Image 1 (tube, one colour):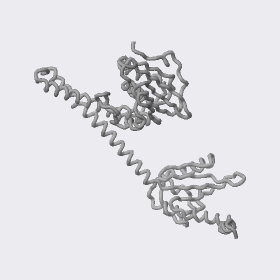
Image 2: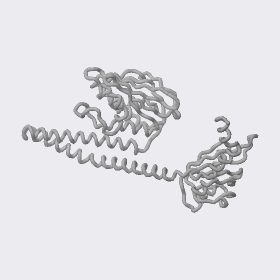
Image 3: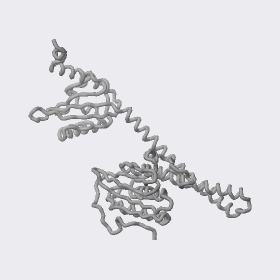
Image 4: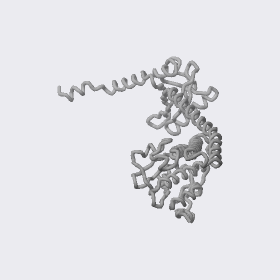
Amino acid sequence: MDEKDSNRSHAPTASAAADLYRMQVLEMRNYAMFMLDLEGIITSWNAGVEHLLGYSEREWIGCHASVIFTPHDKAVEACESEMRKAEQTGCATDIRWHRKKDGTEFFANGFMNALRNEQGVLIGYAKIMSDETARKQLQDSLTESNTALEQFAYVASHDLQEPLRTMGSYAQLLTKKYGGQLGADGDQFLGFIVSAAARMSALVRDLLAYARAATEEERPSSIALDEDLEAALTHLDQAIRDSSASVTHDPMPTLPVDRGQMVRLFQNLVGNALKYRKPGLPSKVHISAEQKGAEWVIAVRDNGIGFDPQYASTVFAPFKRLHTSEEYPGTGVGLAICQRIVKAQGGRIWAESQVGKGATFFFTLPVKSQAPLKHTPPINSPRQPL
């Protein structure tokens, strides 16, 4: 007998393979698998039902599937709703809390499929469930911890503002009243205090903005991003004049997003482009918008100093700076705020750059419902110093 005949002789028959498959399904313990008839009565059982739910085969078969749904007074309604959805669409996903035999609850990921015969007639339903309680508890714990940290950062930053203002104000009063009387060292030391207070105040303001980007209540409204961008450029008017910059932009979409956050996002990104300009060269910044599938891709492109591509992801980390504060002022929180804002709106943000060749910061926003692009005279006209 040759090798092919030997392999063929060891291959299971179709009947044996079917028996093996049924045995694997019945003995699978990590997933509860069962079938229902048209009325929602359970007609089959596997070992996972006993392992996850605590029911023996005798106790399980013949029960209505609503026995595992919560809350109790809505169980039948929830079960029948899932069956209707499976009948209409072929399958239904059910991610919710369920009840075990002993009354304890667990968080389960369930899938129900409609079963039909060869003629397409509905004959029942098949359902599979997995216990996701541990993952749900971990996720809830992380969410709670993050919320607590954000609230702490907000409160701490807010409470730091007043003593910093006091320290800075009195240092300035000392400088004004006793400047020149304390000697060169004394004047220098007072200068250090005033400068340090100003830097700390700027850091606290950025920390407040960082915390608010995730904790403040969203105010979604269908507005034109053109208006948000123009508002941001108005805030940056003096910086645009100081850098002899030309800022242009394409028509922007109208999207249901948080207007305040969008203004802050554009202000941070364009302000970042103005800050890292090449010495002696007028800044050129262009903001473009392009729809790609289910999202809009907004790009802020500049002709500044750029940065090494290896830092393209780390620049969004809080306090991550590629230059000293003496070279370029700032706290290193601005791009982290941008990342928080974009994520809060359901988008992504990333950067592309080369040293000496400028940088482009991209972010996306979901399409959702939107109005047509606005084509008004100011659009795409350069904003330049007078």
